[in-house]
Length: 186
Image (cartoon, rainbow, N blue to C red; front, side, top):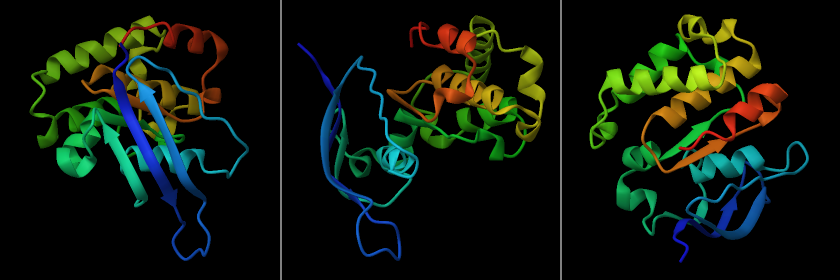
């Protein structure tokens, strides 16, 4: 029997100051273990949809994770369960390692019994598996290529406990790196 991980009902998003919605009445379900790819032309709302799913945009409709809304979880706790990997993580301040430690230290993550050392170890193991040079963890985000930044951001998301990873624009990774990323079990 399949378990519904994410349920979206009548999701509508209107860009502030715009008259018509970017998308409306979108409904779908994602089962635990599913991999879903959202495709479409530039500007059609893929990024906005993922931001709604991760509760980073204000929307109309209902989004449930394991049958509960972000409000029922509490938004900070919900966001620990749904990780959004941006298209341009190079816009972040500091280094990927500082980001990992900061995100791990959020109060909303205290429910997970993972030490900072374990989170770092998990991230470094992923780096090794995905052929990411360990030195990149200590470089500034702005010093990294788009693909390096996105792979490190994905390593942060996957190394921390959670239920969903929302990834944008996998084109930023090279083919060999993509082949190493996909087979890794969560």
